[in-house]
Image (cartoon, rainbow, N blue to C red; front, side, top):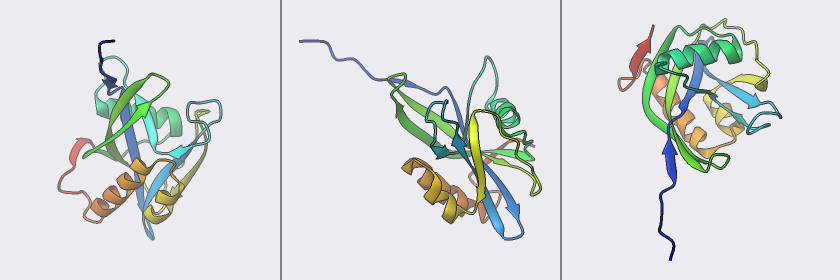
Length: 158
């Protein structure tokens, strides 16, 4: 009988809910992955991998700039984690869900990693994202945006 082993668990980066508030309320940035990328054609939040000794805030700032040309006004650690099985690496990934606030007039310039973007209110964003764990994340973050900043968020960049 073969000895049982564990499935590897890693936390290689972050999942970022990029938000802004405009004339009619809060909007989430939802990105469509380019076909040549992993999960090509899927809609979701911005993700980013940690490099070297970067802090989570540094990862978010770098990835926002690289993928969208956006600069955050503030970055907040929520209490939520996005977790899923990553078949490409045969590993369970656990990513902190970070909230990045950008200015109302922020202009998105996509890198080749993503093919489309939309700024959507929570009720529309939840119907576009491809994963149920992001639907739950949108619901929780949207509720907490009503008392921005939420009392359970920790500011990690201003």
